[in-house]
Length: 338
Image (cartoon, rainbow, N blue to C red; front, side, top):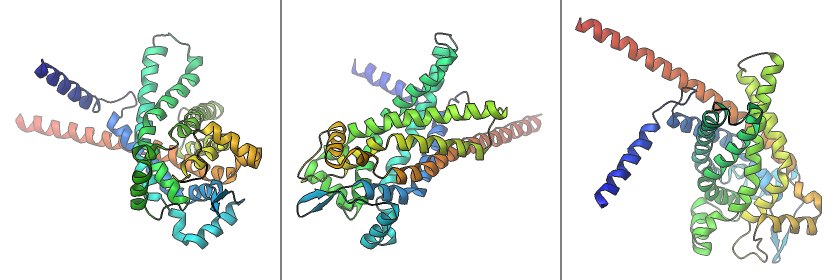
């Protein structure tokens, strides 16, 4: 019985591994979609990390005489204070955990979204179970599920990154050791629900708006395919708008993730954080750091989607060269055998 179970397990593993080499309708395999997603996410995260650090610096609380206080800063004053505290390299606090946490998460998110979208096309639209007018809503659902899948990989790196940016720890090693000692494994998932509460609607809007903006622009200019510059522009628009409207969720998430184990008051969930922030600091406090968030996300999302589209095109082009080379080589072998 055990042997049969083991054989079944091996067969399933091999089947899953083999499926990675089967191309999707766009010509790329699952493995290639993972590569494109990782490259796009890693590039955009590294490029825009300084603005992300400024945003976290504006949103975090500070402990003065045992009391948590909020210092009102703008982009310029936050940058000046950050340089004063940590020097110019302070803008890249937490860049390691950020890139190494976000790149695999981005790979999973893009690949999951592509796979779910293809499944939906085949099972729902090609069979006419749903009308094509519902495609935008299905895209939103696919984006939400894709983020939920990747969040397991994303959140630990996000916790370490934000605590380094907030100046709670001086390095990744200290952060890892301190979180593990004080909070255990659960500490790396502090703010997990807040991350889902922020990023599920964010991802739905981001992916949904990006694809809708592209469709609208193709219709307006009467083109089947957009240029790289046009894709960058649509990505930036989607990211900027989505970033602004989800700022209150981002502020709550930052407060939860940057609270140390010994804080005088620890938020249990993002809703409690939002209510407490509004009660103590006023409604406008929910949008603290919104300008930095928008200035971060417009170029971030443009790079994110732009590099992803470019990576896919490069992989397809490379695949075309490989196939052409294989055909030529095959013909030469046949001629030699003749």
